[in-house]
Length: 417
Image (cartoon, rainbow, N blue to C red; front, side):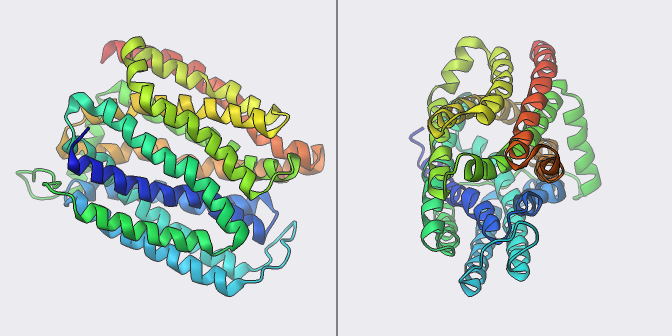
């Protein structure tokens, strides 16, 4: 783990994840300043996640054809530009009027921000795919669990610990501030990636480039591995229910628990402690219990955790629940991603990874939209307070079904691999 290129790679990832952590609060909270309609608020994170469904496959093909370091650099340029545009748009929209319960206080501002979210989200698809496929070129395969654990710990410090708290503080102080800081963070990350030494372009194929043939080759590899398929579908289902709960949690925290942006950021930061802890011990847990049992238990934690989030009587109980949830989530990711990086040949890693992530991440917008629709149509029947909790209860039920299905699928998959 003393590899200089790996350390620079981690530094760049830390910076971009700090920006992503700031954005976790900034995008959704900014939407809540323009409207109180849960469905419209959900559209903002949908704009961030929809590109995973649209661009995952092209990103995989491109990642396997080009220098992955240069691809990351260009995507950081795009994201820095998107956040710079958002900064200017919000600045010009100030001061904001009170957000209406239905409709938008400033429609033009809202839709321009959605466009910049789409732009940044699209760049994220290409960057994240390239970054994940680069890691096996920086460390030995025998050290992948440890490298992923350390990398995700640093990412969580930015993404879930420092970022959300800082984003909440900044948006409460001056709405354009978190977007301006993100633009700077991506620019600095770009400099870190530029300094990486080594070759990060996959070995070229003996045949002429043919995207249909390349994609078919990747599909066949994924089809030949029931465990990879199970991990992809289970991760996709989990992401769907997680997004359903997470967007509802914003309004639940605001209206049911009467907490502000800063408190919400600190709740996410509390969850980060759980994830960071897992980053340092997940490899030891996997070594002791084995990847099969570790993945099964990590998946089963989600259902009771979602239920506890909805029923938590105060911020302290909610913070503790989120910490346990994040610990289990990062442990699951360590098993899943390390297996994928080891199983898939480097020359195909981008394509297979993109198909995998299309399944795993493509369902996120579905969860976000379902959450908004559940609240919108349940509110006249059960009241606002109960309606805000309903997507979280629904996520708990969905996670229970996933856990039961996944226990058997993972058992068979790891035994037959």
